[in-house]
Amino acid sequence: QVQLVESGGGLVQPGGSLRLSCAASGFTFSYSAMSWYRQAPGKERELVATITSVGRDINYPDSVKGRFTISRDNAKNTVYLQMNSLKPEDTAVYYCNAYAYNGEYYTNFWGQGTQVTVSS
Image 1: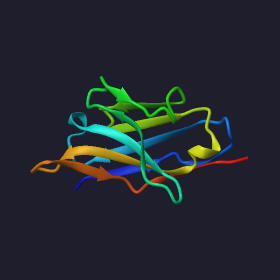
Image 2: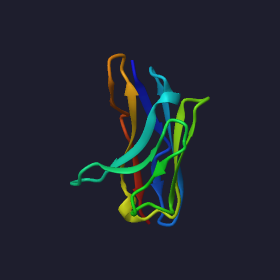
Image 3: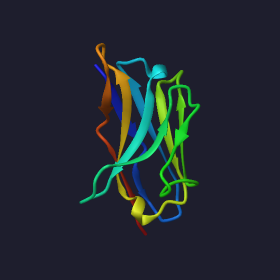
Image 4: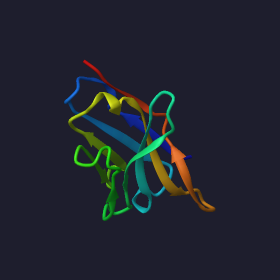
């Protein structure tokens, strides 16, 4: 079955950096668009970054543009999120998302999430 396992979250001071990883299995990773979302307490889940299957198209919301970088390694079935210049408002649970084929149709799969806390 599809599995997405995030890692790399933690506590970091404002201005610091973290690199999140998401190891994927159970589907054809190289055919699938991958995304990172985040959800802060009391807020809706929001898209942070998306990368297409071969990495040709990448999109970020204005809130993270210039600070966050999404990348993927199709040989390792892994997607990354490099987060620099972190701000307290980046504090959230970060989720890995795959838009992948489940054998019948394309649908969304989610990881369990990793906590990122930006605080002094």
